[in-house]
Length: 257
Ligand code: XBP
Ligand code: MG
Image: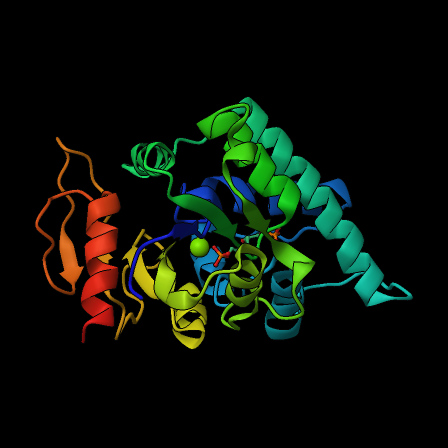
């Protein structure tokens, strides 16, 4: 009980700041491609992030912002097609303009691999997007470093529902008290909380005002030995950057309380 076996990573906003310069841009390119005049600004996109999942986000935009929508027979199919175009644009964009990983991400993943700590991904984004980011921004073979990549529509309900984390635990044959999750958003934290998972939050520009009450540790980024993190919530760890030992200590402290 309380022994760290695995690290589980969210993708968007956690591994890299993919939303503003990646997903948002790809959505706008897909809109232009089909002749829509929709344009998701940086601020508007921040509001749209209340809903996870690209198809769900498009529907949320249609319902709440009531933009001009072409007369289509089947809105579900229209959204599905639009989203498939967006995925294509997103993967192309990541290939051309390699998005950098956030501080400490690569170091922590490499350290976990060296120590035999198991790795997984649990995200609401589409599987192709995960592969594109890992391949272009981490390493060509990085997909293979993750025992489970749980993504998008593999589960019935996206975050804030806990489904994607419960699916990941089941696939890995692990229980919540053997894992630490890395997340960046309130929706992600809500999902972790319901799954009973110990969670480290690294906030970003879109999530730094969100509510992470109860999260185990909230920091501005994972940090590096020469780039200390700032603790925003939770007990200050012994180090100024997050490594496997910090995650393990958090888990064991939690299981002893
Ligand atoms: C990420 C998302 C994703 C992306 C878009 O949330 O909400 O929907 O914005 O991806 P999280 P798709 O980081 O909490 O997993 O368009 O492929 O759905
Ligand atoms: Mg995220």
